[in-house]
Amino acid sequence: MHNELLYQISLSLVPNIGDIHAKALINYFGNAPSVFSANKKELESLEGIGTIRANSIKNFHDFKKAEDEINFIKKYNIAPLFITDKNYPQRLLNCYDCPSMLYYKGNADLNSSKVIAIVGTRNNNEYGKNICEQLIEELAEEDVIVVSGLAFGIDSIAHKSALKNKLKTIAVLAHGLDRVYPSQNSSLAKQMIASGGLLTEFRSNTKPDRQNFPSRNRIVAGISDAVIVVETGIKGGSLITAELGNSYNKDVFAFPGRVHDVKSEGCNFLIKNNKAALITCANDVLENMGWKKKKETSAKKQRELFIELTDDEKIIISVLQTHDQIHIDELYVKSKLNSSAVAQALLMLEMQGVVSSIPGKMYKLCP
Image (tube, rainbow, N blue to C red; front, side):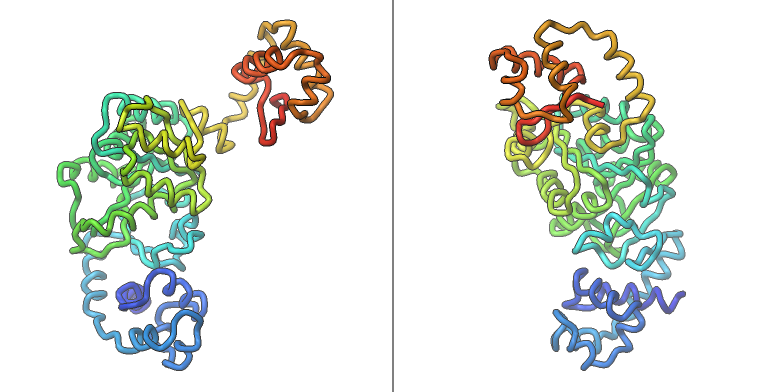
């Protein structure tokens, strides 16, 4: 096992071999030792490897760094996770540029059934703080794991709120596990190890350099089912995480803010450009993700029995009851109501959870 880990870490150190090529090599050879024992001609023949990368592998002799990292891992009880490890986060493995090597200290299951990333500005205002805390409080009974980046602002609020509400929370770091950045979050990081964890692709002695943060953000997005942007400016790193989430086909959500508030400019941009779905509460996330508990659905149906409907709303419902779904134009014809009456009735029925709209200007009764 020591020998296997030595070559796994070493593969992540080979010059010119990034995560994409490392993944391709493992897919072909099956394991890291076989990559290093392969002859140059075989390496060169692989698509995307070629002579330069083959030479980098065959000329690599810096195994001492890998040995040092193994000693660090053992000393501090850190779990190394290579892409072939069963405990490697499978959501991340499905991303084309996933790290070949991760280092993890914690007790949360990285492959838990519900994982959400919550990100936002480092310089939040009270609005962002309140929204973030309320969101996580509403998620408290959902057994959701909260992922963020341990930065000041929304990241820290998300981690602290998760701990307060007894949810596990994971911080993805832009440096090695021999330090905490920012240092003011050292106490928070220790709490998270006991109820969540710290995760990074970077070896010990790696500083939190600027170029590491976009790499960190791709892991935040990649290990999650959904990315929620609470509050961010137009140039915030959270926008990068949201964009990455979209590129990985993750669900991306954002809370809207006031149109002239620079701290909400990024969220409004995402919503306006259909890069994030607008949400106002945790229930929006649960419904969109299909995580809403059945007992809540039953309770909702029970409440709907007592909704007082206007005459126009009753007409709309009677039409919808004879169709699985119906186009708005046909609804005008079938109901014999004018367009403004139909629009008002549909709006009220949607707000009461009786009717839902679907793409293509179609409408249907909620189940």
